[in-house]
Length: 198
Image (cartoon, rainbow, N blue to C red; front, side, top):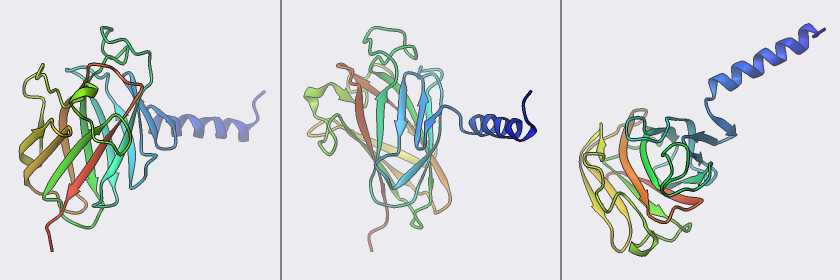
């Protein structure tokens, strides 16, 4: 027979797990074939959902407490299979949507992303990692808060959103496709809000 106190603890644990979808541990969330971590600091992941397909992209929801760059760590959570079924395997084809809340206290007038296959080393042409450099999918890059974007592939893989603004306590979303022709078990996405120069 289950004691009433123990039953309450079990119910609370179940409710807590349901309120934190796909949470593996503090700051680590899994969605599709990948896990996402805020272990580098400066921000908090609130959730990660989606299968990781074009029709059901992975959505990472987060809060940034700073206007300094932060780094999202992305790991393969399932076997790597370049020609496997997207969502079932880490295939190197990752439709991603970042939804981020501005808790920095400063307005963001631009927002940049940079891919890194090695921490603190910008991705280059030879590592196979890019913001869909081969342009296999059209119209994947968009934001609800910025009207324009620019992609750079050399000397590093960068994506910069501009012509917009995100005030403190407001949120912005950014959608894009990450491709990796040599799928890695771990890579990094640097997120860089930009504020008006003083």
